[in-house]
Image (cartoon, rainbow, N blue to C red; front, top):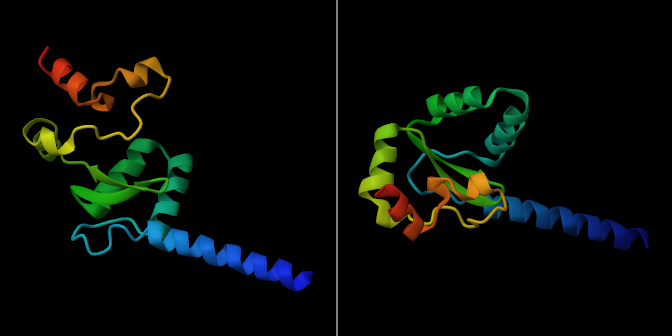
Amino acid sequence: MLQATLALVFLLIFLLAWVIRRTYSFWNGKGISYLSFTDYVRLVYDNFTKPLPEVILTNYRRRGRFYGSYEGFVPTLVVGDPLLLRDIYVKDFKSFSDRIASNATGNPLWDKMMLNSPEEEWKATRTM
């Protein structure tokens, strides 16, 4: 019984390590700066212990105008340069429409934000 329990524990640890390695290596070889798993864990910790603007500014200074990060297990590109954001949201809009995977959150204020709108609502709001 003890051997089966130990085998199960080692299997779970191995699977967890495999999932973490697979998920948090998305940005490897993509040619941009990115947060490693330990950097991401530090970022999550900093989000709870420091003011958010300080955390954002620190990462911007460390990583540059844009870098790869994660929202949980989902790879996310973080863009901090206003000129680059303008190009993304206006000029290259077709390539970046429907940025949020789940648009409906149940929060009416969040759901109506322009940056969280699906493509058609975004266009209508933008042309007002």
